[in-house]
Image 1 (tube, rainbow, N blue to C red):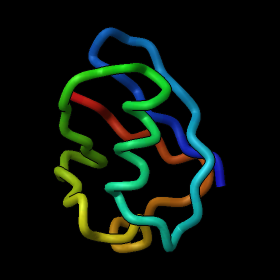
Image 2: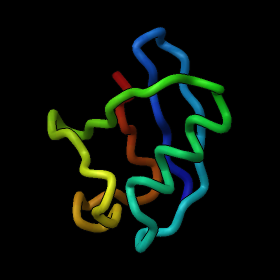
Image 3: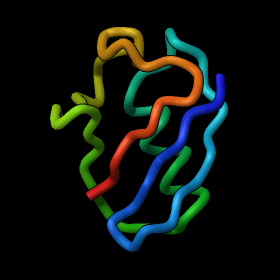
Image 4: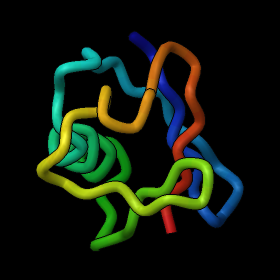
Length: 68
């Protein structure tokens, strides 16, 4: 599924993940695409824990996740 990560700069990237993937996999994919330092991922105001699967946060196709 394709999801979007929106950065505080206003730019966004698209990441292809599966719902059983962990937040950590998403985090590392985003860092690889943008060559960034550390940041936090949030959705609907909730900070995502790296060890949890994306499905724990009801993340599905087209979800926008914020990177701060």
